[in-house]
Amino acid sequence: MKHPIHPMLVHFPIATWFLATMADIASLFTNEQVGWVAGVLLIIGTITALLAMMTGLLELGKIDQQSPALKIANQHMVLMMISWSFYAVSLFLRLNGTHLEQPGLMAISFSIMGFIFLCSAGWMGGKLVYEHGVGIQHLKKENLN
Image (cartoon, rainbow, N blue to C red; front, side, top):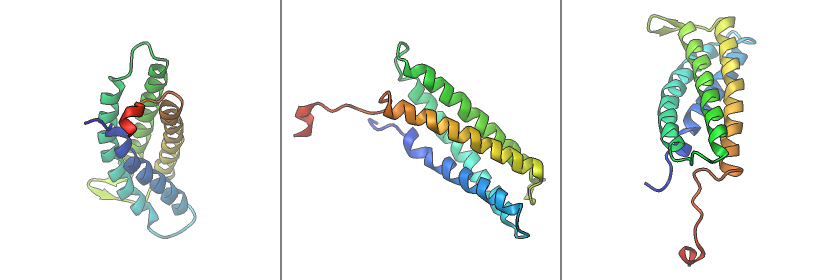
């Protein structure tokens, strides 16, 4: 496949984790069960992030070892693994067996830390694409006609 799969998959964990973090913050100010919604979103985000990380690892292998983009790609990968870890801990802190409970302050704190690392990782991913052209095919003029 010529088009990398990683950029297609990253939107799912980003969206679900963002919404989970917002629901966690909202749960601090309301008596509603939005914390349960955050838990469901964390499950979806944690699973889809594993798929995105696997495809990202495949894309990492395509970067030239001499490219300055490789250092940024490795930073992106480490930040993303840290973010995943924070979100996974947040998820496990709200599990009671197989049931989700309202999150405690510790679970919400881990969710917020995951979001901070998610934003940093996303910034690095943007640098890879927009500054270094990673994953972008440059078409020759004759291919455009």
